[in-house]
Length: 509
Image (cartoon, rainbow, N blue to C red; front, side, top):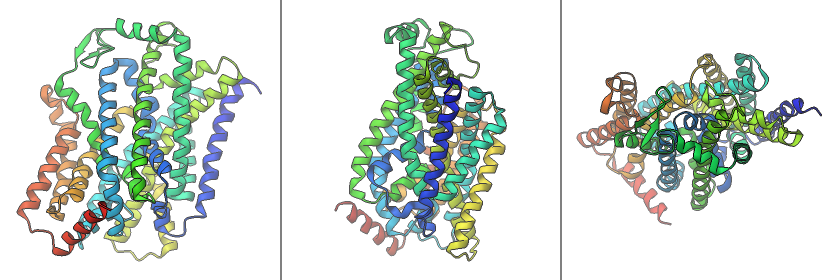
């Protein structure tokens, strides 16, 4: 086989495998609960790795190395630290309690949980939270499709839009057929492929760059590059201060975890609540190692560009793609490994997109059509509705991703802030504060959502102390709104508080 044919064959084999898994797991979907939550049958390893694979997305193999490639360690480093802390705390604080509580109230989606937790018969909580999921998941999914388009455009020279549409079709196919179980098990495989991709690139890249010492020496020679308190300015060639306020703002990425529907659903789906500790350890270790490796790949790419091993990139998010293409020129074995690297980038994107599509689909089908609009759908019609909505959302994602110059990192950043601010404070207070009520929850969601947009597009434009990540102020505002409104409105009913106490008692067993 010619080397030039190895990469496409490897990628096609990988895509076919994902579709086959979807078909296999389609037989296990007996009802809508199976389709959206897998019947709560996930084991600890699948739970951990599918949660983190769906978390990291194309941001891990494209966005994070790209930021490190251009500006050094400060922004990428503090973001990674914040995410590592957030990952651990999310597993520690939310996972077990949500697993118990969601089963207690019979919730199979995140809007279900909020509505059932507060016994909201008006379905206002359900409707608002479902709309929030749709608003922020469509652009999030679009960023994944964009990453796929960039990948195939760079590798094969395929027209960007054609490549993006083909990728979307594959993701839609296995997600529509297999549902949550297919998404979770493909995510497990994809996390393995992602790990192999990162390790392959860093080993090959270090070797071609002249060793770890050469990479670090190059980083030290660039102003502000190898620093956590300065950032390299690509326009001036100098260093800008990375202030304490900016560091705190960047660390706030970790707050987003408490509100991520596609991650939270994994907590709700784990089979044995007592094995969550195992999942937490696996997830936390994998996240720390993978993000460190991704950042260091950015450093390697910077040196390889200077050495003219690879060309200097205008689009820094393609750095891993360029290194892998260079790798593929060094024999059949390395070409196969390069093909797995590209499959890894696809894995990042697909593992997040499938989970997001399911979460968005469930919000529309289960929560808006059946919950809010009260449409009477039997199991068969519910499944058809779920799959139809999933396709529509994917099409909207493709439309939003039509501009190939959009940044994966920036789009994900905004959607992450949206979920973190609207759902994070509500989730924490729902699980840990018995006095919270539905009025506070509604106020928190609305206040958090408004502040994300207001801070991003208005307040941050003032610069100075206001130029911080919108998630931090929006999270604080939402939390305050929940507390204040809950305290000035009526207390939760005795039925709600007794239910809460039952969950707390179950936590201690």
